[in-house]
Image 1 (cartoon, rainbow, N blue to C red):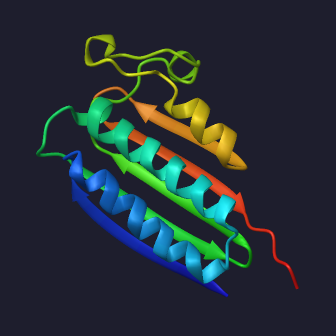
Image 2: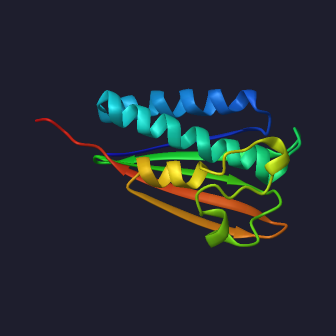
Image 3: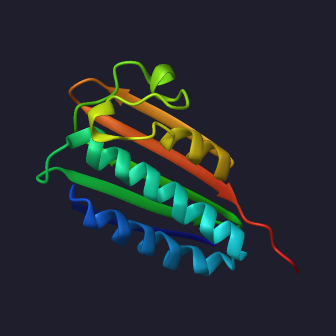
Length: 141
């Protein structure tokens, strides 16, 4: 059965934990393993942090998150209407950061790709970024 949850929140760092908690609660409907739940929480944290820090860099932006479950697959979409990414392939490279002065590790996309089954990134400079991540959950019947 398909299920969907949509939420929006301000681009303040405290809302990263909120988004992670919402995603974890939604995932419980799919009966995840502890590892699968941790993978989703970590990936959502990275995507939302990117939207807050790199998309906006200010507290008055809106981050949208859509969680969809369909059978044993979860789709997480995180989007912002912020600055956008000029070079997506460069941004996806491990250790690349557009804010080295903020002591960012540049591992956000690498972490998402390691923990999720697929990660799609679309962006337009001055219009924002959307990250769509998918994860299939193992089911012990």
